[in-house]
Length: 143
Image (cartoon, rainbow, N blue to C red; front, top):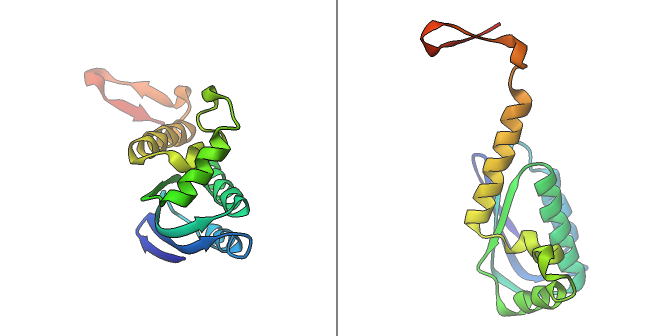
């Protein structure tokens, strides 16, 4: 796995196989993602993924989502996609892909998720309504 950081964006490239032996690398990456808004994961060179690797990747994506970090993976190879399709078949259609749903989000879906997370973060950090006092001309004064 290679990792490059561009400001608040991290670009990961997974190489070779993602299985029981390489899953720990995702935990190591998770530990160093401070002040990150987006993780883009290039899957072009991931030739094989087993169920343990898939579980590790879905756990990684869920943890990022929980930390309000947008995650998206792209350029999937046939074998990992087949495995995700098999797993998705085990879940009801309304479940948005089951555990693989976060892995299948495209850039547009990830951007929408990031915007929603940003709006939530902004609402949390906004001053309470009592601290906002409108004045003439439409300006707002914060106390």
